[in-house]
Length: 162
Image 1: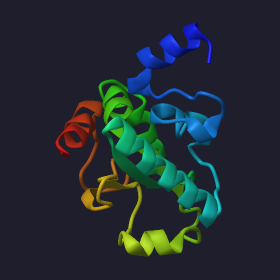
Image 2 (image 1 turned 180 degrees about the vertical axis):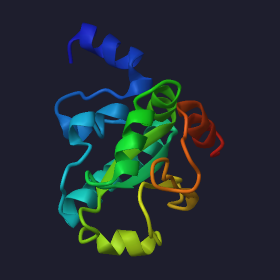
Image 3 (image 1 turned 90 degrees about the vertical axis):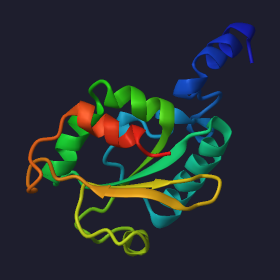
């Protein structure tokens, strides 16, 4: 690796740094916005989760599984909230994100059942050291009874997970 790239990678370590391709990416590079609605096989998703767990152990971050679908108004709204500050920074610094596109509830059934997902947008926070679920939440800022959710409120919930 060239010295300038090494310095850049070191300075961006909190945000993740892909050294040579996506398989080595952590932080925001692990799950780029372009892959927000990616349709993955179970094997591809399992590999992405394993990579997130490795990144979490290396970076001292948590793994955030995001159960979503492109047809879901709440999921689209949560995507908008997650791109705003302060949530964007909290996610980049504290989490390895993996989006799970459930399609029409016909994809990744085993993972959905394992985490008892009954509505989306759903979030599961995993400790990469132990594999334990630390927190779980369903957010429905458009269709649910909770009403609108601000970036500050979502960031506060994400920060509260230890």
